[in-house]
Length: 272
Image (cartoon, rainbow, N blue to C red):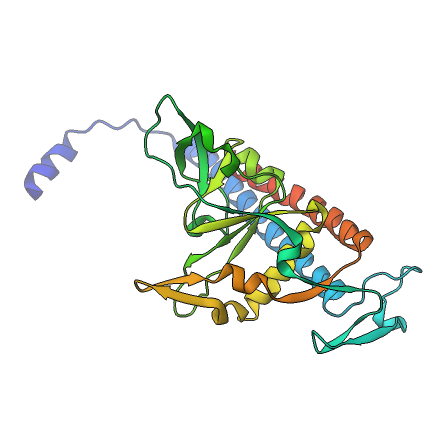
């Protein structure tokens, strides 16, 4: 077999490209690779900045006060909350996490092939939670349009994980996510999607959820069925936490919206 392959390769005719032209081609491709790598580093930094801002405003409570100064560091009044067993800014409410949500949408994996009564969608699996790019194409019933995700929904992984990775990873559905995945997306049966009573709280809730996840809280809300870990969504959503004032949540949303517009633009450029 090796002799046959050698003979076959020896009979191939390959067009020779002058070395100067090869160098030009390599330089172009290398420039594109460097630009893609740069965009990815920029996106990682932008995500890091948004996460730090959430921590600064809503964990350390150094959001801008009426004079534009950090609230807690400049003597903003804090009061003891008996429910949370911690101090919170005066006037802030405490709510169940479920109070932010108007709809908990279960997923639809759909079918491999289209029929007359289906529509093509991009489908988010647990494996897609991080990148949200180049989603697998599926075909769901045209009567199941309520399964389609809207801008500023949030998707969580409810089944899967590993001994060192909890279920409950989350993703924010920005306009760019929907656009780059064919304008119609849903999530698989192993995920859930939250729609919010007020979309302006979506960024606040998303980073709140990420804070809990990054601190390992979700490991405490996992059940097992047939060896697969399942996130106990309703049990977790019964927990209570502070609700930021509407004006502050809206201001944070505006910053996150602008940040993700840049992130999504960079991803679209990389795809191109």
